[in-house]
Image 1 (tube, rainbow, N blue to C red):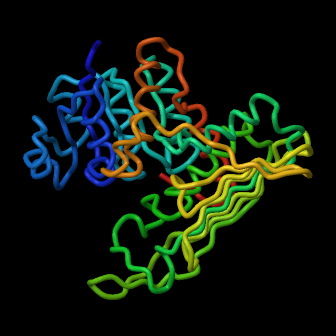
Image 2 (cartoon, one colour):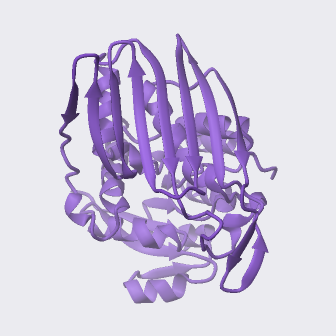
Image 3 (cartoon, rainbow, N blue to C red):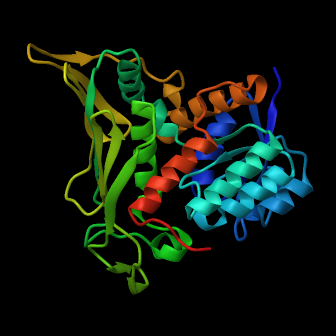
Length: 344
């Protein structure tokens, strides 16, 4: 079987999650890392052959088949374009773009390049999420009336500590909407099988004054985001992410007229699934990820490895379950409707 040479753009989540996932996957060889400040140091520590300051230099400077764009959101457009200019297969982190126009440009470039391009919505591969999507697809839940996704977290509460940087700067794509709501919107659209007809919602900043080890600073990004979606045919979506609460919790529920399916737990990757109707409540067993043994490295690693499986299918056959740039554009439109749209 062919092994694909991959370069990673971004030394944050790219090194924390993508790097170990790619190193563990039998079909990829990590040959390069691009980051403006830390690529050389990390490459030496992790035995990565090549290090570059940016994606364009990486694409030009070594032999690559694929590029994982895990740079900050403000760099996605340029990094994706650099990879596509080199005719590489591309996997881009979320949020796809800073605004709808950037997403449209990247989609058009991908269609012109005709390489295998997708988005890193790895949480589609959480077993309970996959099971709910299948319950919808096979008609076990019908007719659909409401999809509800609620994520609660503590890391942006008043006493929470997170270091200043681009993540707290709106003009650079920081905040909860891009980081978390993008996943939630993708999950809702994927579960029900279509994009919404209309959207309303808003972003909220409850704690603009924050503190890290260097003192006090001002956040210009949202720490909570809320959306109401109309999918047509009597189906609505209620989506919320709030990172200022006292608890960690994730709930995904699909309500139909005949029954409800609900998955809930402390985190996105640690949930229990139930099917509920008027007569009984049943806990449904879900088959674990084939890469579950890698969870101890990072909970995202098994999910990313399943995502890479689909990327390989897309490269080799042109057909897969890889989240697409087209779907990323639909997510970007929802984000824009609730206030996440940064001029460039």
